[in-house]
Length: 123
Image 1: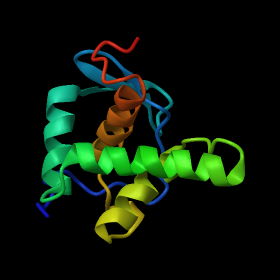
Image 2 (image 1 turned 180 degrees about the vertical axis):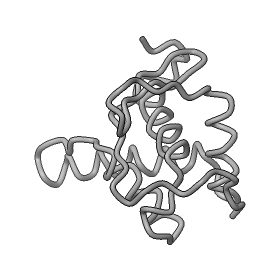
Image 3 (image 1 turned 120 degrees about the vertical axis):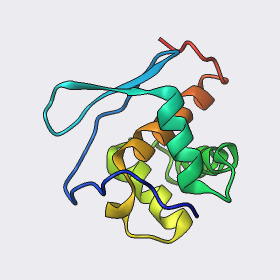
């Protein structure tokens, strides 16, 4: 696993479900103002953080997990920041507060794109 060059987020850091555009992920963070993350940079950081795992494989595991939970519980789990970051942390075996926010945003964005059939322009 590569070490992220970004600062570690605060323990209580939360972001909203990102809006995905062809060039950016846009989410509201602690400031409650929209924050823009360049997709190319965020996706690169995500791939580096998850290595040697493949991003597409981890996204598929998350989607499958959500689908299984829906089947077992009879209702869809609401995806929140803690759901996404907690999944990443458990998958690679680290505390959730060690997942950089850009990694969480990029991963969540990739799951949104995956759910829409891989369409790059999702809005």
